[in-house]
Image (cartoon, rainbow, N blue to C red; front, side):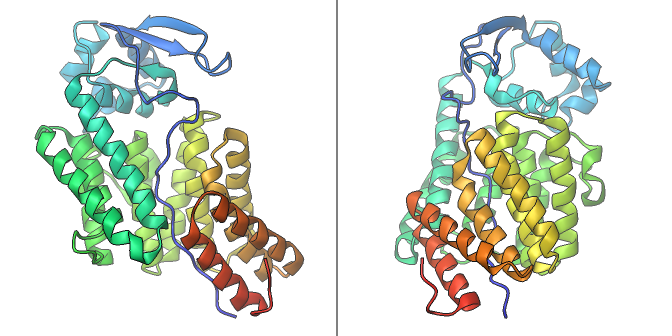
Length: 358
């Protein structure tokens, strides 16, 4: 029987703790909440520079290593001495590279930064809707997403590499403005341009030799997805394996790792399925399912169950496979993803015949 394949997931998540990404920073003082004490109700204040310096020292990093591709070493020096306050996007990227979850850090932002952040959130939202919409509705979501992208391009500075990176990876996800997709080679070229804006020496064979903020992790995830679509499953699985180890090492037991683990594990499991490594695919997808439940990121759950259903069929457990197909189907419907439900339905009936019911 033919292996049923369904789309890779991109990263389109937000924290589930009720906070926006950044809020409440005054001058050079950083408000930190303890996620184990009421999700932000327990607050401590520390100097931003001291916070960064202490963590940088713990990781034995130089200022240049930490800030490569994000800002100049002089800027880090000034932050650590308390004479410069970074923009919120820069601060968030630095903290993420240090393995400090953004959900605990909040900053006041300028009107320009707010406009940029709002546009990026809208583009992410429209991309999710574009990915999950029925074919007849997709052109409208694409048009609106590109309107926002053009507006974002107009307001960002030339040296805003993080925003330029966001624009490049968004274009890859959306395809061209006329609705046609980029070729796989074009996608890889755009994504490698994107990651090397902030990680100039990025190397696919030694991913864990560099530091990444979560937006950079998203780009690497997309690169692995493109290799998977090209049929190069060994390369794709190797990238996902390195990426999963990086997240587990640098973001253990945080809301962010909970948000990104399901996406990475799903895409990794999908690459394993395409390589007919079904037992491994089951194990990786189950790890993602547990992360969904633990951290409350249920938007990824139907995709992981879908993956587990296929793997269970090919490991000769059709009873489990059919139950997982049913669970995934109704979850797709519950989260308003008719496209996913339709793909699952067609795939399940290819495996079990047209009489299979949900």
